[in-house]
Image (cartoon, rainbow, N blue to C red; front, side, top):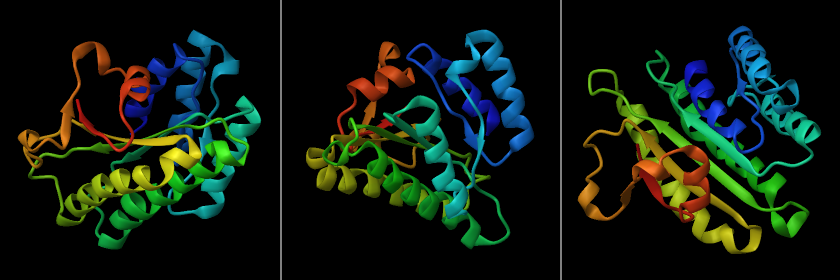
Length: 204
């Protein structure tokens, strides 16, 4: 997961800054050291968090706000798969992302002192042999969640939700009009955030 954070964090440095949040503290801190050396220490910091822990999740938002003075983009990643306990997959990939998204609304809500912003919920696709029925269910849920939440809340809050499938396969039929294939110059994350409609679903 840290390698995925690194790839997208590098893109965000061109737009201002990034806060990698992850429960792998050692790898996260090593990533920040490398990125700080390249882009400057004021642009990043690592905060340990865990979708399954409300205290750590709330702390991540508070520390980010303290560091940057505002939050305008939130990236959640659904990538937890292969656990022996199916409830763990659902806790992290559904409950965790829902909680994080709601916190994103809280801190970015333009009607409550925020400046508006964007929530990008990324779903890391899996080969058929690696996927589980629970993760498949989570993916379908996150599509419906992003579409309906954005319809209900975007106008009042100024916060939009975009769903991005990384390495998506043929689970979703791209001819049904629900997926939008990004053109090459629009597939980088900052452009995707700026150009995507709220509630839209994208693939890489």
